[in-house]
Image: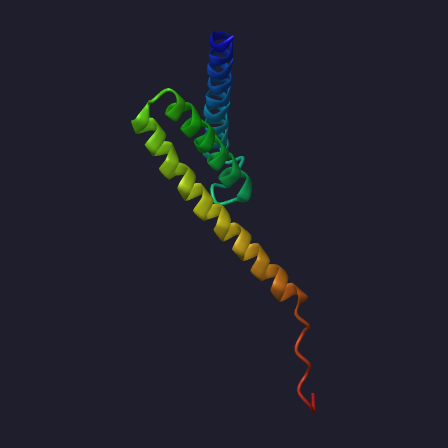
Length: 106
């Protein structure tokens, strides 16, 4: 039973890694063809997701240089996505603030 579980886990990790590679390539192709903006949220989400899944795959297979590369890549993705979230929160706060009252005499 242990052997079968190991094979299933290895297959699952391979599927995750393959999906991550496809996602990264798709995102890169979309940006390169002008169909997606590199500074947009969709690209950043795809980039983070692809790097994170490749990191899992690489670590599982003890491919440490690739795992470390994708760990750093994922970290950059987390940092970038947190900036998106902060900017959106700030924009929502500013939109919710009441407009300043007009000065007297205007």
